[in-house]
Amino acid sequence: MQVVGAILLVLLGVSRFMSGLITSPSEFILSIYYFIFGVILVLAEIQLPFIMRYITFLYYSWGKALLDFFIGSLCFSFSGNVYF
Image (cartoon, rainbow, N blue to C red):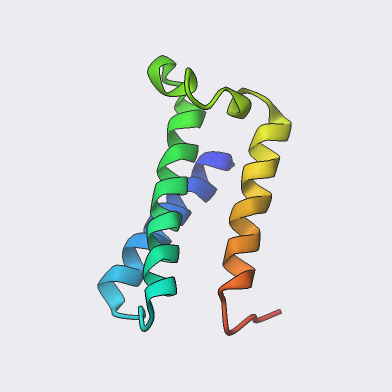
C-alpha cells in the first residue's frame, strides 16, 4: 500500500508541473518535494542496498510513519483549498 501512495505522490508532483497549476515559488518547491519524497518512498519499499544505507530510518515502520506525517503536513500547510 505504501508503494501505491508513493507512486501517487510522484504523479502528483509531475502533474502539477504539466497542468500549470503552479502560481508561486512555494508551489514550485512543493511540487519538487512531492516528486522527491515519492521517489524516496518507492526506493525504500524496493529496499535497494545503496539507498537504504543513507535512509536507514525507513527500515522501520515508525520511520515511514514520520515521513508520511511530514509529507501530509506539507500537503495541508501549503494547500489553500482543503476539501473534507
